[in-house]
Image (cartoon, rainbow, N blue to C red; front, side, top):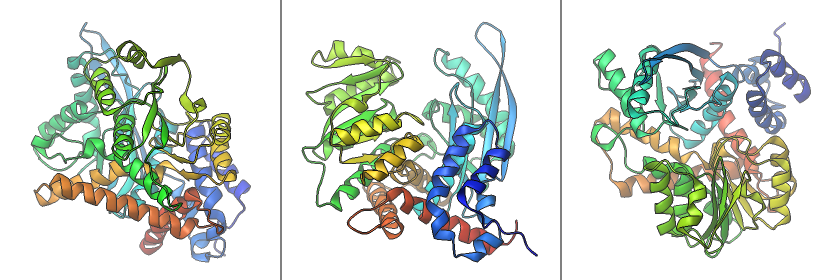
Length: 451
């Protein structure tokens, strides 16, 4: 008799924890999805007989490798590199590369797991993957970063390809790092293919890729508000982070008539009650990108603001909130504070920035709450469009890409409505996103048989 995975949620999660010891981020990501899909798959015997849930929670492969490089002082340095290829049921593995001291197998497995469903929601043919290293680019010279990227790619190139696995950038990996890695890939393989996205416009990149994640999160937020007959005009927003996603989310909020009150970095957050205007956003972009400055310097440039060292911005009263920094930055108590202060909607710009307690708080309050796999999918959507442009040896105009991004985010929103409508005017966007993304991947896996 065939063995079925038709077990209850606690038993399933106990198995996940046993198979993945000391990997809390990955276990958290699996549980957040499993909580929502168990009821949906209850009567779908094919899923159980084919162990689909168990198979989705096991990456196709996890590659770990040594990265040796030489610093400017002539010292040999050793880091660890990874590529997690989670699932390619609907297309080549697709997901970013992250350079940060916090990178480990658990973090990358959670990101690759989330990426699988996020990519499925876009409607584009992309599987899920993620990679990176515990290398810290902060404080490193440009030459050191180049040497590290080249060494990293000297191993990674064996595992990627335009039809196999197409990495992009992430925390610590921007256009400069993508350029160094692409140059090394081209040098080794003697091929000019669309093996990486986030490239420069001169050599195969796409317009609006830089803006896409932040803009997409705000488009999704606007779609949620529209279900209540509202828009962003006059609404106050608190945003965490001050990098690419946060600044472009702030930019789009301002363009749509909202007022941004906060931005942050690892040192604390800035509260500007006068509003962070486009001029101020441009200052932050320049200060963070070109001067490698800190957000605490904002108050010297704009004296009406205050800097709150070592704190997050979730205590500032607002209409909408966008966590755009990193995983588990918005905890249960923060969620309770946002709800108590009258926050109407939360759209995640980062990957899994809200912990499970916070997710449960938002759901219980029946908030308009979008998980990152839905609301921050704009970045990977435009990465997918970059892949298409590379394959066709062409480039689309900015107006075309902006419309495609809006259409993709609207399509993701519609998928969430399809599976997340709980009646009484409440849409559980987490449940909707988890079921819609998981169903597409699971059905493809069923079609392929046991592989």
